[in-house]
Image (cartoon, rainbow, N blue to C red; front, side, top):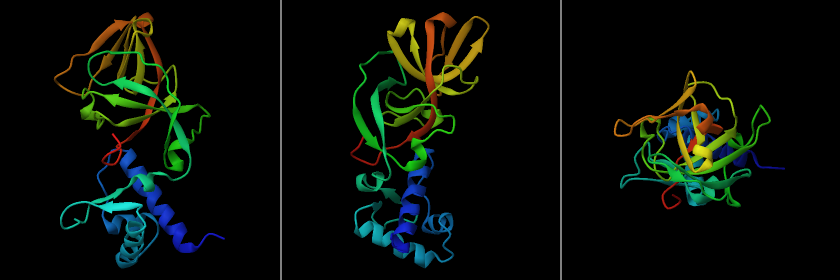
Amino acid sequence: MVPENWKVRMEMLRYLASMASRGEGPPSVREVGHAVGLRSSQTAYKHLKKLEEEGYVEREGARRRARGIRLTEKGWEAAGELPLMGRIAAGRGLEAVALGDEAYSLAAELLGSRSGRRRYLLRVVGQSMIGAHIADGDLLVVEEDEDPPDGAVVAALLRGGEEVTVKRLYREGEMVRLEPENGDHEDIVLPAGDVRIQGRVVYVVHPPRGRR
């Protein structure tokens, strides 16, 4: 039987992973406690302190500021794995890369898809999507979807698979416009036949320091 204290701590780890994956900043102790149903911030602090002692979380900053709680590599190893399939450009076109077989551990809520569609990871190269909180070195959880809605952030193959990129998708008649989220980069506009949508980005994972 799993001890009740460990159940609470696992919920904390999954909450921290979920926050990081949505691109949100580290939560406060009070917010972590509230998310897992704890009324007392002191009780939440004790659980987080134990997780820190066991190497699951770290507290950043010289004074370990209130919003400095981050998962360590051990903390990310929660409940399953997604395959890391390669790199994707968030900037200038990147030559298509061979798919790899490396696996990356993520929290359980990132792994499944209600639609039953397959999910995989791509590592970002470049800064063209920083306005969407997608930065160089981040990991994208991509759900296979050849027909996502306009405005979705997608992984796309360009010009017969010679380039791969992540951008926001817009269809304009017989053309496809792939819009960056960085004013220093221009839209990519191509005939629809030259663009193949691989999938829709459903989560952004900001790896802890040293894992980018």
